[in-house]
Length: 223
Figure: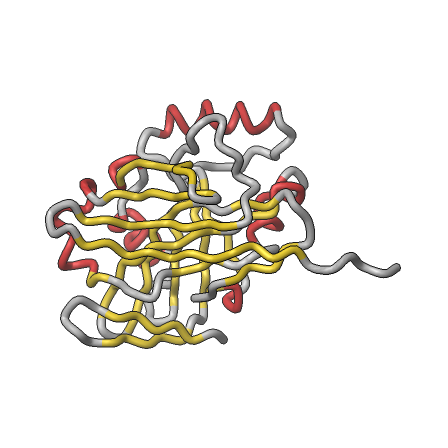
């Protein structure tokens, strides 16, 4: 199982072994908008989920803090998200980029989530320290340096919603990492980029947490 390490604002470092990795999907705060988005994706061949919001189990080894993501073809892209990390010292909040295989996505969203890593930031905040202003936190992403996502956590179901889900499922325990689902992309920006950078920001303090990586195409297969 992978081990993640997070530097906190108070100078502490928290390390946790990932035992369970979960990716939320269709997790917008306005589920009417989500329903419209599901219909749009269906027209592109992406299968609709049975319920929304959805929650996809992902292989734990895909949780990473890496600077490079290897891919098999050119139709993959990231998604700006926040990550909830349950540790022995409480719940942490950090930024994440859910890299997704868009070719595979039309055959199954759960399959596509297991085809590439979730890249997490190397810094984090204690959830309790930002819980009173969670909706004001900003979430942004850049693809090859061009802004492709720009919003706030108010657009997504809050961490407390997912904490309740984890408790209901017996998963509120150290080693569990939950990725939030994403916000809309800016129309017209090429998502199939060679570099991705995501940022979680706190306007109240000016502090930010970033994660970034380059995308590396694997060699062509033989056979």
